[in-house]
Image (cartoon, rainbow, N blue to C red; front, side, top):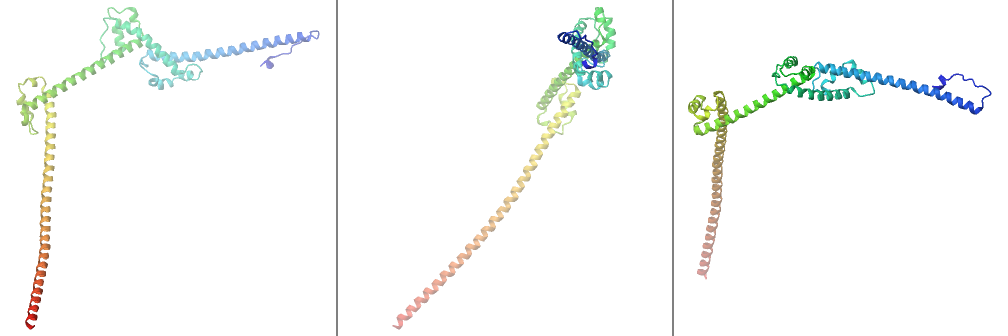
Length: 320
């Protein structure tokens, strides 16, 4: 502070008060300027120290990229654990400028832009060696350097760009191989389904779960649709079709068994119902018979009462 840096300032008693104030202000201004210069120097020193920390982390990224430890397609999450263990990462993380992840993203963006130009150079080399799954970056670098039309610019490309180019060609080869395999499987599937359809039409109802491959082989021998499919695939097609036929037969058998069981229950239920009907009929007849007996007894009683009255009336007429 100014108070800590100030010293005794002798002033002549013959100087006026205004001059004294002017000298004091000039003196204070010089002290403030020196203090600001000191602070500015401290800030510049701190910025240089922080810049060195960032530069050290960039140098670490460059070394690992050139060694092939950081692939061109890498993202921060792919390499963060390894980088965080380095001393350069800790120093860069403790300064107020760009963070280690931001430095990494900037570095990789610049690396991809640089590789884009290098890739154009490599693609222009007509004598470039073929790349297989076993090709290494060093092998490719040696082969590309000896290519007939490879200039000094291509021969001096960094190893990281060569490694990225080799990785790109390998990935392209894997994608092409996968696409070829999918196309072959699709063609085989179509051929198998065509074989199965032709076999169904040829054998018809004779194709059952008891049919063997030897029987099928004899039937399709010399047929055009069979010659389009190798024997192992023919066997596969028959195996799949045989399983479908057997499943259909099992389903039909289960349905028939269920229908038979349902019919038996219905027949038993019909017999039981008939017995109940006959029993009710007998009971109704008994009830009807009981009613008839009562009616007959009632008529006999009325007949006896009528005869008795007629008899009594006749006896009364004779006595009169």
